[in-house]
Every structure is written in structure tokens, then in C-alpha cells.
Length: 111
Length: 114
Image (cartoon, each protein chain N blue to C red):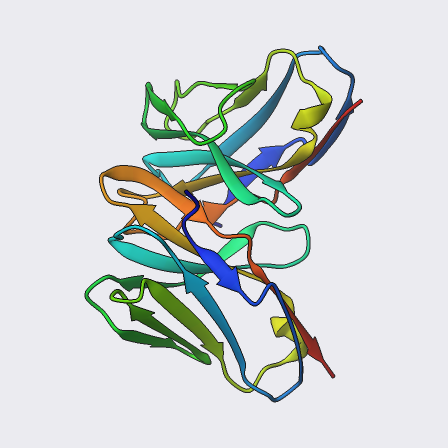
């Protein structure tokens, strides 16, 4: 079964607004990671949140994790045109050394 | 500069012609991995390696081979490419356990098999 499904699949907002993306997963995890991908390029790591953490901040990014609901959210505040990209959550599987990526949320920031 | 490099970046080939996509990292990472990215399917792991001479299958290993003879290199081999292997391929590396550490991705290799 697929781990890490992002919602929505696409999101378009005005520059300066906040963007929220959600990720749901199916099995127990150790950690959850968020990555950004600019069109056709390699993924860039944004933030890692551990299963015993509920919230984490990095600059304009805020990530929450609710292990009881098996979900996470990524909030980007005061969005900029440069935030236009696809965002992926990645979850590990306990006992396995691999990350499983969702299909991503395509975020468009309109000037 | 810490980085993961892949070559070639673009490749058009024909069915059945063996090819190798190279991947190299300069961060002394133990863990390396190959993914393919297809529209609507996201990233799927092909193979991974936890250290030299230690490799294991990911979720979609059929039609691919890998080797890890040196820590820095992790080539992906397509012995007999087929059109369904047309995709965007990414190599990634991380130090230690992948679940606890960020992965560094290469720039990608866009492969077309005719």
C-alpha cells in the first residue's frame, strides 16, 4: 500500500498568502520528511519531523504531525513566487531502510 | 561543494541496447538509492544500497541492476531497456539511516527508450 498521499494535488494562491498542504499515511513511521521539487529537477529536503514531535518550524515553514490520525501538514507562510514547486512528503516504514514518497502537491504562487 | 552527480542528464536510446546511468556523491554517504519518477505515480524506489557491496531491491526493481563497488558510486544498469522504462531517474544519498537523515538528490536523468 502506498505511504504518504498528499492533498490537494494542486494548489494555486496569490503571493503573500499562506499555503497549506496535507499528507496522510497508512502505517506506523519513525519520521516524516518534506521535500520540494522545482520543475524537472532533483528534490530538495525541507524538514524532518520525528514521530515523537508534534510541530516543527524552519523559517517560513511549519510542519505538524498527528500520529493518531496518521497525517502531517506543511504550512508555507507569506508565500513568494519562488515557492512555486511540487511538494512531497516521504515516510519511512519501520524496519525497512527506505523512504516512500507520495505523488506530491503542485503549488503555484501567482504574482 | 557537496553534491550528487548523474550522467548522462538526457538519453534517448532504442529497445534492447544496454545502458548505464552513473551516480556519484562526494559526501562519504553510506546510503544510496535510485528512484524513477513518472506522471501520476510519484517517485518509486528501484534499488538501494546501505554500503559497499550491500544492495537491495526497492519497489520496482524489474529490468534494472545496480552495483556498489565503491562508496561514492552507484551506477544503474539497464541490460535490455524497454519503452516502459522511459522515465525521469534520480539518484540520492544520505548518511546513516535513511529514515533519520535527509536525502540529497542528483539533478535527474531523463531517459527515453524508443
